[in-house]
Length: 86
Image (cartoon, rainbow, N blue to C red; front, side, top):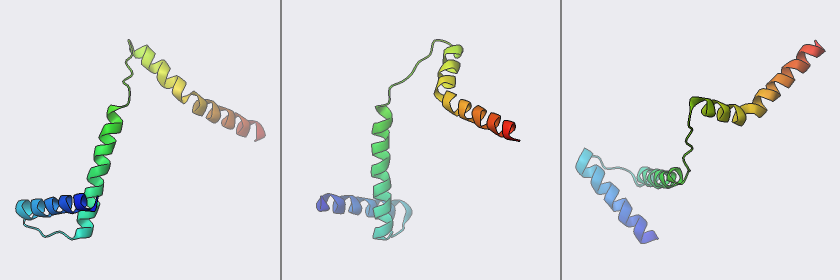
């Protein structure tokens, strides 16, 4: 594991030295490597999300309404209670 990290660290150092002419600190490179790894993991997670296809705009509207219905009802009940108490 450590050898793999040193290899990647060396590749990043060489890339930034050749491309931009900048010598980057190891801590900054560590951060860039971790961000790159998180980006790869996020891409994998996004590919695993199933697609939802709707036949019409109405189906999409009903899906959105159903997914937000608990929030709509909560706000409605809360505002009704406030109105009744005042």
